[in-house]
Length: 339
Image 1 (cartoon, rainbow, N blue to C red):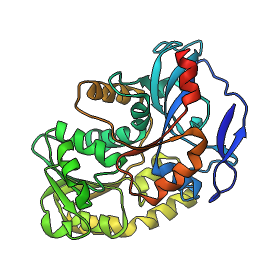
Image 2 (cartoon, rainbow, N blue to C red; image 1 turned 90 degrees about the vertical axis):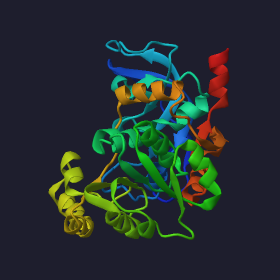
Image 3 (tube, rainbow, N blue to C red; image 1 turned 90 degrees about the horizontal axis):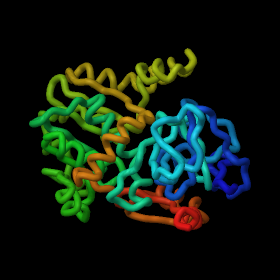
């Protein structure tokens, strides 16, 4: 089968013939029909995460997938051949930019039925990130105030809708051209980051979801109320993450040093900083699918590319500017399903 493979960091992906995936007794073989691209894919290509995600090369990239189950392992009970599923695959199954992929049963769910295959494929990583930031870690309650940076991006478009569903007052940063769009998604306040400084406009927030890091994260700490929390989804990693990830002692020390400044600032302000690296979770995807099907969350796909243009799609994604998600589709696999 064909797959897009990273052979060397910072180089374009190469289309290669690779071995068919095999499945274990608790795994599922899936025909790939849509792959949502993520900033994580581009950061891995550039080698930015090679210390905490030490993948050996060559490596097929891709975390998100929507497709059809072809075969199930002997102990799989939740899905059967022919089921349409979606997944953010686990770190040991990375490689959805391929015609077929093996996935752990625990990481898959039946996909939403009210959206297209491309829209379903756009969701897993960003929707899980939003869910884990707002529900699992942020524990957002009705009436709380939440700031979501980069509201027009993949995570932002889902997080705004989910935060509003949870009863929060939602502020977001974005360009002015996206203001009406983001209000329609549920944002109460849209701050044009080109012309306004959110730090001077906001205060008393319970939670900030930060995807920009650096100065933006430092400012975010200062809009929190005492006891509030900033969750960073791009860094810097903190000691709790290093411990939970089982990193070696040298890396744990390095990560502690990387986040020392921001953690010190948070303590001084009486607030909390947490780095969050989302994890695969089929049960959470089932709950998200229900929210999509009842109209609470709608996927936002800003660009689609055919499979053979995946390297170009990843390059454009890295340049920014796409509203919502970029999705790679496999029309030949879709035709095979329809036959």
